[in-house]
Image (cartoon, rainbow, N blue to C red; front, side, top):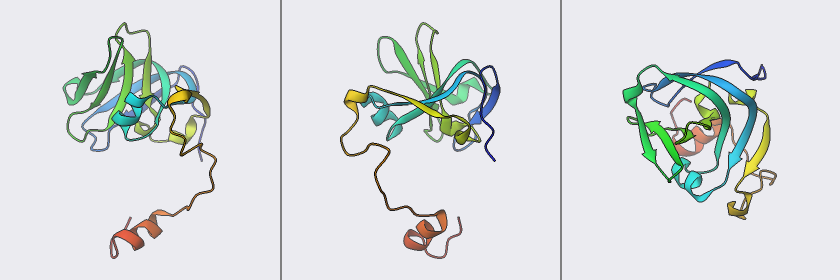
Length: 146
C-alpha cells in the first residue's frame, strides 16, 4: 500500500541499472508535470518530478550532467541514460524524477507547468486501451515472463 511522502522525508532512489543511487530530502511531496519541449525530449515524455531540498549521490561519478540552458541542468545515469533530475544552476531548485523512487505513487499529482507547450494529443484523462504487464508480454514477447 502506498504511504504518502511528506515534506522533510528522506527517500532513496536509483536509475534503471542501479549505477546511480541516491538519498533525497523531499521539499514538497506534491508531484508536478513539466510539459516544456526540453523535458519532453529529454525524458521521452512528460517529466514527472518532486521538489527536493537536498540529494546525496552514492557515486557522484555515475551521474552525468547536461547544461540544458543558461539557468538549468539535467542529471542522468551515464550507464543506462535514465533521466533523474533537473536543477537550477544557482542551486535554488531541485526536481527529482518520481520514477527514480521505489514508490512513485507516494506523490500526489498537483501541478503542471509549461502547460502551453503540452501537445494537444493528451490530457491525462482520455479513455485509453489499458494492458497489464502480462498482456504486453503476451502481445510483444510471447514466452517471456514479466
